[in-house]
Length: 392
Image (cartoon, rainbow, N blue to C red; front, side, top):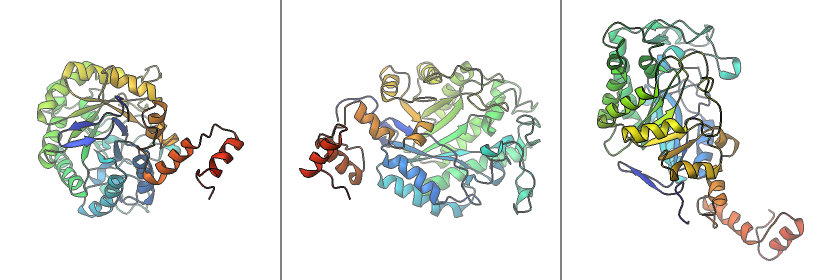
């Protein structure tokens, strides 16, 4: 491969990614009692086979009451480790670094699926542990109209939750994940503590900026103590939200968390109200959130990951070449084309032999390219007759 910022390896702590393309964590809502299914193996496996350097598993809950829906994955029990290890091993076999995002839904727990309109999930006898699915938050303020009313967390709740993050990080290590990300964005529990819109506490976890970040700091400290030193720790942040958290706050938080062991800020935005993260008044243009990653990277001297309508190969290349971020996260574009990294390498002209693809694919794709196929049936037939890929 010739030189390309997008396809230049990067090393964070003791983990090296073969390129700067990250498959972002995307919920599939297909878990069964917190356990993964073959759908997760297929879904994540195609991103790894498609050439992404780092593949993140969707947000995985650190305790039962932290589940957003009945289809969430969990890591609050040792029983989850073995089935997750199967996914990890497969991602590694495809040449990708396996990552996991840990999260707690907080007041966004006990919801319906997105295609069912979200909002509060009706009580159901089919959910045997309904009473254990307690909706908690920093303050008794619902996410929005139609959402469950949360119970304000006690100090015991907070301590229990912080401990759960540490235990889940330890299990993630046992399962073999090499990168861990904490979800502190989009209105989930850590973000709920950070934002003044959702945190009206009057104790040491609310009020001032220093108090509102205390929960995030404690989670990072507990996770970093449980997560091996040679493995990087990311934090997804809503760099700004519609409830009073500003980009300047994110920069300050990054400066505080960097010496505590956070290695990269994944910079998104919004989500603290009932609106989705992209319904925050920000103009939806290509790379509309890249400026957040650039600012945190510059002002906090911390590696960042850019996300948000990163669609084209040359667009991603320019983001990295211009020093706006260190990694680019691709989400729904990967759902559209799981082979986006392979395609990007072709469009940038840096992988003529399809070395980025698994050999089972790359060998035949390369032979097709060598056959001189230009789109006409006669050219393709000629290529096949002279030793090109068979039709079978």
